[in-house]
Image (cartoon, rainbow, N blue to C red):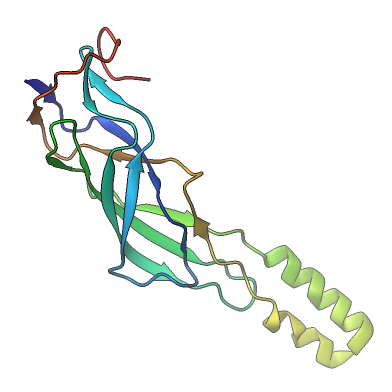
Length: 162
């Protein structure tokens, strides 16, 4: 048995893309572990292990160049012995690209071509929804210290696998 301490970092990636334009609070999503986690040379969480997260908050992109946001909670992953290990509920929020500069530029261009009504054209410039996919690695942490049965040596001598 290997002790996996609470607070141990676990790097994860989403299986499918999430977007602030389509996600809803309460939606669950699949994750995979991005790199092995080893303790004192024993593999406790394998790269590619599955898990699950939940959407905590969503704000779609809006007018005036306001970017979308999405708040995620990474809930759990499977350890090498097959049990689920709860990850911290530390909230991760990603923000989409802010389009305020584009809005200001649109206002100036609209004024030049449309006159006074063009001053209000910036109201129609929409910000971008944020999208998170499997190319982005998210950091989560083991919630509580647990004991894990591991029979696989990771090649790491001590500490966490890199």
